[in-house]
Amino acid sequence: MHLHDLIGIGFGPSNIALAIALEEGREGRPQQRPLDALFVERQPGFVWHKNMLLDQAHMQISFLKDLATLRNPSSRFTFLNYLHEKDRLQDFINLKTFFPSRHEFNDYLAWAAAQFEDRCAYGEDVFEVLPEPRAGEVRLLRVRSRDAAGAVRERLTRHLVVGVGGMPRVPAEFKAFKDDPRVFHSSNYLEAIARHGEARRIAVVGAGQSAAEIFMDLHGRPQRPQVDLVMRARSIKPSDDSPFVNEIFNADFTDFVFSRSGSEREELLNEYWHTNYAAPDLALIQQIFEVFYRQRVSGEPRHRFLRRHEVAGVQAGEHGLRLTLRDLNHERTITQDYDAIVLATGYERDRHRSLLAPLAPYLGDWEVDRHYRLRGQPNFHPSVFLQGACELTHGLSDTLLSVTAIRSGEIRGALHGATGLDHATGRQESSRQAA
Ligand SMILES: Cc1cc2nc3c(=O)[nH]c(=O)nc-3n(C[C@H](O)[C@H](O)[C@H](O)COP(=O)(O)OP(=O)(O)OC[C@H]3O[C@@H](n4cnc5c(N)ncnc54)[C@H](O)[C@@H]3O)c2cc1C
Image (tube, rainbow, N blue to C red; front, side, top):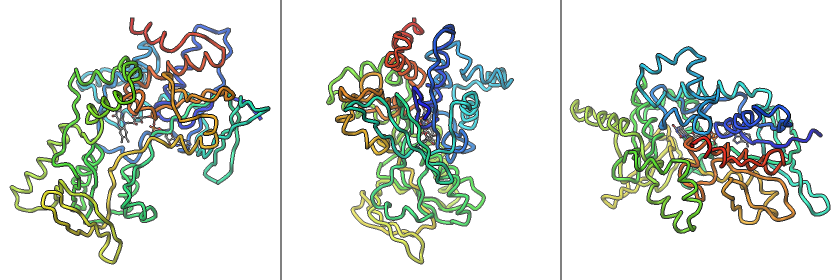
């Protein structure tokens, strides 16, 4: 069986950025053996959060935090070079924005991904990673995936990087509805809502960017559904992207967070939690407020803002889906029937634990080092990196695009050290870039 130096699980922005960093690491070193890296992606082709590619949605981060710029501004994989190649650079300048549409950023990511077609196996879902023990030592890993037809494929690798993104978080009350197409997570929104064109009464549960975007999307639909926006919070608070606060997303803040004790890290996460979670863009909040205000002017209440409401139960019946809601302001319980319920309830970031479960005996308590590498037992030799699952140790930027370019340089450095190809660390490179 062919042996890879590295297998990457998932080919989203994190692993595309790593593919770019590996490619650029070779430039100017023709004598160096290229690292044999393969990425395995479950989607049939690249697309970024395809069910949230809403027409009005924009990036929530500057385009300069693309796949490469912060690590290597002269990379050919920057967003600016993408614009240049697409002959849109001047028009983009005239837009006067740092925040391209989500459609355009998806197109940029797809353009970058397309340059690595030969290094990505699309349409394969990795379901487990096994150790290959020999005489008590583990030097290789066996990566098992399943294609759309159900056929299982196995590959061997020396090192692994897991970049699988988040898994939909489904509140306990809705777990029993996982096979009911009327209850769906925001990660399935566009596909699911297309199947529910006739839905008249829809509840959107959540208070974050996705909930806000979905509310506005439903508001604009020609079928004019009635939408209840259900949240525990009293108000929808905007994300704080003011400059001093935004410094927590700078690359050197990762060092700061990582060097703190567990309790200090937790305090930092709590202090800045709202920069990323349950915090839509201010402009979107203003649009929603205006929708409710116009309802008051017209006297035709279509949607409701059910603030301080907590889901207490869900039942399915002839009436549709009956939500029991605890009204936290008035200490009372109400019930309401819906044709569909959208769960804009966020994501879990622990999928690596089930994927890597067979490696658990070698990995102790799933701790990662500064280079995002799981700390293994002395008899476990592969480096296993996690991208996007290290928020607790590396800070809030970890699940975002903020440090993607820098992080891929750091992982490349650690990987080259582990493979003996090059001892320069990614950190040295990123500080060279900054200098
Ligand atoms: C709707 C939405 C909008 C966002 N907008 C922004 C933004 O504007 N700015 C920002 O900084 N962040 C944003 N984010 C955060 C987002 O996490 C990052 O932008 C980015 O997508 C992280 O990249 P990733 O590669 O780590 O994860 P993902 O983009 O989630 O990619 C993971 C990839 O792994 C694949 N995969 C998963 N499991 C397997 C498996 N078992 N086998 C094979 N393949 C697998 C998936 O199909 C996917 O392609 C947004 C998130 C969402 C949901």
